[in-house]
Length: 261
Figure 1: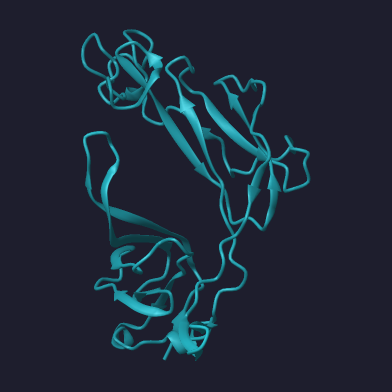
Figure 2 (figure 1 turned 45 degrees about the vertical axis):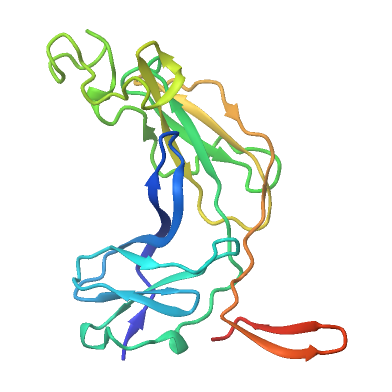
């Protein structure tokens, strides 16, 4: 028996809607959850556990995503764990051998508007205060500058993109179109797009972030800062819920909640 959580990074979960209404909102929220992760392990399969229950097993060593069934309600925190197992033991439930999660952290998501006014070759850095109240602009939180135009075809306008990389006379075949982006934030007929940056796990506290853009010559812009953001990690989900007692006279039901499966 050999299970491992080492080497498995960036586990993400996204609830899949049943459908999208005309106004862009989810028509209904299903229990289907898309779980993705990164791993450099070879020759291993992966198991996904949802709130202490085995929810699914991959079928190929190269598989790094899976759709599993989530809990009945997403009102409370949901704990999702991904572990690597030997192929011949992929059908075994190892929940008893998986260490329960410690204090759960939380993340902050920043949305940066990718306006057509930003030059080709521009990038941006994200800075934070680490919960101290003073943003450190000497060391960015991202490892390398994040390119605003990673694809030259996204930059619009005749002669303002990398000419020849787009359609003749129009250099933005991949740019966000009318009504499909951040409408009202871009040029008429061509909406602005948005880039999302997600922080690492953060402990409980109050944080501030700042963003600076960098042009192709290395010049930094003035900082655009957020206000104070309160980070409250979610509570650890209950692995087991039982009835401790019931008082017939008062009608009071006492539940026993445990984080141990």
